Length: 359
Ligand SMILES: Cc1cc2nc3c(=O)[nH]c(=O)nc-3n(C[C@H](O)[C@H](O)[C@H](O)COP(=O)(O)OP(=O)(O)OC[C@H]3O[C@@H](n4cnc5c(N)ncnc54)[C@H](O)[C@@H]3O)c2cc1C
Image 1: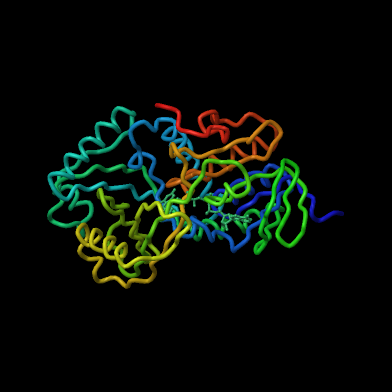
Image 2: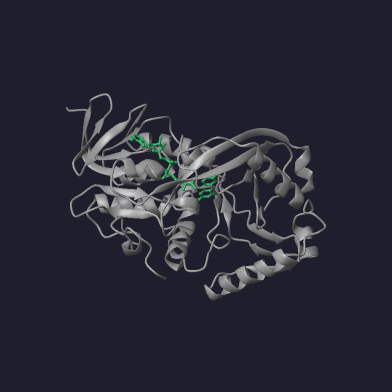
């Protein structure tokens, strides 16, 4: 038996690559994941884990919203099949802390209702009733009670175990240097044969032609008593708190190429804005400051599909929603590998789309 021959070779062991590998393995394909670092070492290690299709909605991003909603629907089943990954339907509270923020929030609410999204409008007092740690300056808020969170680090650990349980192989410390439709070559001179799925996050462009760039995000991890149960957002910061005692404060959005330096200014800004919303966070331990690189695209849409007829499959460019989009991406890529029509319309996410299509 040639050990280097598989039905599918997945390049990249982040949330997206592992979700694709797991879906394919569960459908009976022999898969191998090739990851040059450790499992989840890319953007996935930074991610907060908000599963927030409604509060992330932006003007002109209807196609992305549809995909986000389709994936959010799959999350309960996806999480249940993986075991304890910290999935919690704790809801999002988007709070306005002054008059300007209240006006901005009213615009977001108008956008959400135009898109048919259900959110609840709350007074400042109602916000404080829901989240007693919230500053008394809270002027109002939007609540999306259905939104959820997950722990991305537990998620990738569980996904890797699930891939292996389903008969898949995972090779870490293996860097892919070249791909084509029928296989991948590694830096140490090995050749892997099989249909290729490139899920290399912001590094995807070094293997295939794709309009994907790194977008830096700095993020903090605090430890101690939970300061809020909803994912709490303002215009300038979000706070996601888990039953495990981890509280995440994120995140910057910076165009700095492949730089992952943690800067004093960003740490200062994140703590200042989190403190403005939830003064109690000052008591928590500062456990970690980290920077990750989101795979961004010109239109903020992921790229999922074949690069060309008979060519490698791309699953990348998930930008700010790669954790949310893992279930739907995995299902779609497994369908493509099996020669089936995916159950979501992938046309708006074709890797052949170089530039944004005007909305
Ligand atoms: C600060 C921050 C906060 C975020 N918060 C959220 C959130 O709350 N909710 C949400 O849904 N999303 C969030 N995201 C976005 C999310 O993290 C990404 O969209 C998602 O992790 C992308 O997953 P991926 O598997 O495509 O990429 P990655 O996780 O970057 O994985 C790509 C992998 O490919 C490997 N690789 C690259 N090149 C090669 C090669 N040549 N050979 C072998 N392996 C290779 C890398 O080592 C890496 O492990 C956040 C991102 C950041 C940075």
